[in-house]
Every structure is written in C-alpha cells, then in structure tokens.
Amino acid sequence: MGSLLLISVIKFVAYVSIVLVTVIMLVYAERRVSAFIQNRLGPNRVGPWGLFQALVDVVKLLLKEDIVPKNAYKPVHDLAPIISIAVALSTFAVIPFGNTIELFGTQVKLMIADVNVGILYLLSITSLGVYGVTLAGWSSNNKYSLLGGLRSSAQLISYELSMGLSIIGVLMVCGTLRLDQIVLHQTTYLWGWLPAWNIFLQPVAFFTFFIAAFAETNRLPFDLPEAEPELVGGYHTEYTGLKFGLFFLAEYANMFTAGAVITTLFLGGWHLPYAEYLGLSPTMLSILQVLTFCVKLVLVELFFIVVRWTIPRFRYDQLMNIGWKVMLPLTLANVLVTGAVMLLIQ
Amino acid sequence: MDSHAVATGALYGYRNQKSSSTNNFFESSVTLETFLFYTLGAVSVGSALMMVTRRSPVMSALYLILNFFALGGLYLSLHAQFIAFIQILVYAGAIMVLFVFVIMLLNLGDEKKLNERFSWKKIVGAGLSFGVLMELIFVFAFSKANLPPSHFEKATDIGTVENIGMQLFTTFLFPFEVTSVLLLAAIVGAVVLAKKKLN
Image (tube, rainbow over all chains, first blue to last red; front, side):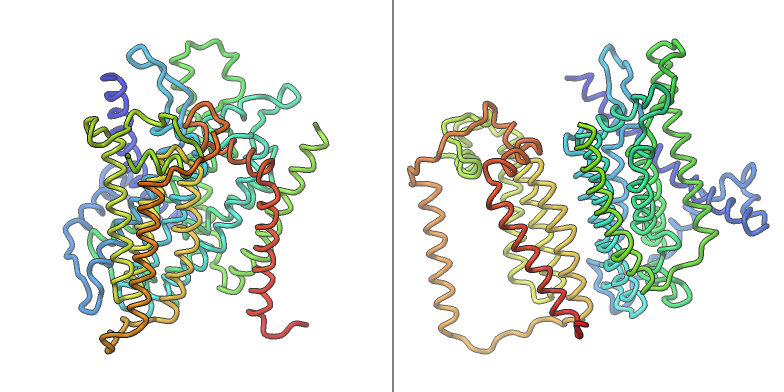
C-alpha cells in the first residue's frame, strides 16, 4: 500500500513536470519551425539556440499586470482560464506512455490512471474544454470575445461528433475501451510483418480523427475562434498576464494531448516494431518503448506545427460544410464498412 | 436504512446484496465512499438550488453543469462508470454547450422579479413539490417493494460497458430500437423546422 502510494506520487510529479516542460518547449519549437518556414531565424538570443526564450516568456507573463475590464463578470472571467488549463492537463492522465516497468518489485503500468472506460473519459473531458473558451468570450463583455466564444462552441460541437465517430471504428477493431488494451492490440503483426497499427486498419478513421483534432485544438486552419483579422484576439482579447498565459498554455497542452491520443489510438502507442526480437532485458525494452512513444509524439507535433504555417484559415461556412457534409458522412460510412468487413472476415 | 444502499438497489434492481462495505452511516465509521456520497449529494442539491434561484441564465446553466458533474460522481460511486461518463459527455459536454450557445446568441439579460405576491401558480407549485417529496421519502424509507433479483454475481459488474451493451441488445432491444426511431423522427422534424424552403 505504501509503495503503491509512492509510485502514484512519483508518476504524478513526473507527469506534471514533463507535460509542463514539454508544453513550454512546444512553444519554442513552434516559433523556430515557423521562422524556418518563413525564412527567418526566430528566437535565438536567450540561452543556447534561444532555448530559454519560452521560459523567459513565462516569467514575463507572470510579472505582467492582471487587468479585468470594468464591465466583465469577474467570477466567470477568472474561472474560464482555469477550466481551460484543467481540462487540457487532465486528459493526459489515461494515456499509456509505455507498457509496464518494474519498480520496487512490482509491475507498474506506465499510465497515470488505468480507467476501464479510458476512451469515454478522454472524450468527456475534451468535450468540456469548450467551456473555457465560451465563458471567456461571454464574461469579457466584448463583442469580439463573444463572437470568438460563439464560433468556438459551434466549431467544437460540429467536430466532436466526427471525432467520436472515428473512434468507434477503432473500438470495433480493438473491442475494448481501455487505452492500454488498444495499444496491446496494435502490437501484433498482419501477415507476419506489417505492425497492426490502427492507421493501417482504419485509415479513414485516422484521417478524420486527425482533422477533427486540428479543429478541437483550435489550430490553423481551424483557428476561427481567435482569427486576428476579424476578431482582434478572439475569446482572449480581454485577458492579460497570467490568465492569458493559462489560455496560451492550454492551447499547447491540448495540442500535446491530441498528439498523444493520435499516437495511442492510431500509431501503435509505445510499440516499436520488431523490438521484441532484439533480446533486450525487460527494463531496457520498457525504456526503449517510452522513447518510441516520445519520438512518435514529437513527429506528430511537428506535423501539427508545419500544417499551421502552411495552410490558410478556412472561411466560416467552409468550416461548417466540411464538418457536417464531409466529415460526418465519411465517419458514418467508415463505421458501416468496418462492421461489414468484420462480419465478412468472421 | 441507509439511503445509499437503497438507492443502489433501486437503480439496478437488486436487494440483499452488499454492494460495499458501508451499510449504515451511523454504525460504521465514515469511510471514503460514504464521505464521497454525502459530499456529492450536497453539491448536487446545492447546485440544483442555485440553478433555480440565479437570475442570470448563464449562471443557471453553469450550476446545472456542476449538478451534472455531481451526478456523474454519484454514478461512479455506484460502479456505473459507463453511465457516469456518458452523463458528463452527453449532458455536460454536448447538450449544455448548446444551451450556453443559445443563451449567449440571444444575449439574454437577467430575469426580472415577478411583482405578484400570491398567485395560484405558487400554491400549485408548492403543493406539487411537497407531493413529490413525500413520494420520494415514502419510496426510499418505507416502501417494501419487491425488486427482481439481479443477474450479476458482483455489484461491480453491473455498470460495465460490456454488461450494459449486452442488456441493451438482448433484454431491452425493443425499447432501445423504439428510442432510436423516436430520435430519428425528432432529427427529421428539426431539419424540417429549420429549413425554410424544402425543394
């Protein structure tokens, strides 16, 4: 019992510190990659290669004055960034970032919480993220903020459906709601050589989920809630200092979680193909698998960043058309086809 | 009688099974489960009251969301993980988002106070709520209704996704399908109402 508690505490502390550091590094990566795409240098003065720029920015945000507009509704204005960051950080709890590792003589699963309805937990928590944005828009008492908040709720409702329906395809193939079981299911091989990752078994679901993830994280080409040319800053126009910083952090934490979910559901999670045949000791294999998960995650995040700086923003009607008339029928058809194929194989 | 144990039985149709180690709040020491039950119960009742009494529609909606969370927690303490998360996913995450969206779109101000002191509405309302309260007290405290025995060995098995799915597609297939037809009719109706011209 004591060691169980200790393991939980270690997991939790490691998780929070890793996520926060990674999220800050994501901001740095985004600025450097965008600079590369636009033929600039990007931040390169603070620390080696400008690595500490993001940290210094956090300190700047901490020291800035916190201004609440006169007509804003203060309790909700304060609550909104808290909702955003809490939702963004708590989704990661069910992601398995490795198989099992031996600690203090017990096999420890490398995930914070082993929930038997892991996917439902993920979906329900991410569906709450919209409140942070919507309430920020409403409580600021500013027309641009309100429009940003409204756009965000409409967008998230539209794309949540496709997101949930693309996951159904994965659930049908894997037959479980546990995320660690879904990864285990992907560690087998098709025809003896192709890893049974869901990206190969469910390519359409992967495609739709990826697009929905862009929309759910408010990233370009789906960043209409904060479209600068039309809405000044969107829902966070009236936020300054640390509260703005929390929204900023939440956006990158969401991106991080979305990448982790995509890796887990479609890219085989911590599975490194053929690593079982290398003859490594169990501990080494576990560490290798955690590293594999990290590499996959980084690649997905890099793809997120490159897409942001390559593709222009959608118009609002285009956004709604894609959500309801393209994505939704596609995901429904995917569920139907998956069911039919599974029946035929049986 | 411990209301928790009775509520568990009433919800899942079983009796005489020890779903947990806590059977009587007053006899046993306060365990985590009873503590959670009373905290969540207090939060759900409190948020429900706040929801009814707030004047700003957005605040009412927020308290309703809090209420759904407390209910979700109560479901979790009854080993009904599926219902707990569906409660949050569907009600807090989808339906209430639409509510908040519409409230903001209409930009509703605060509700105005009614001037009338006594009205028949208040009397009827008070009478009805008193009746419902009496009924609940009767059901939970005095009723000796014979609930059918459960099919499950362990109380923890009842709320799993597998068992709910099994029950839905075998025992309760007909009501399940009827519900889906009703929902389809509602969707078609909504489209017809929203679309101005049908070509």
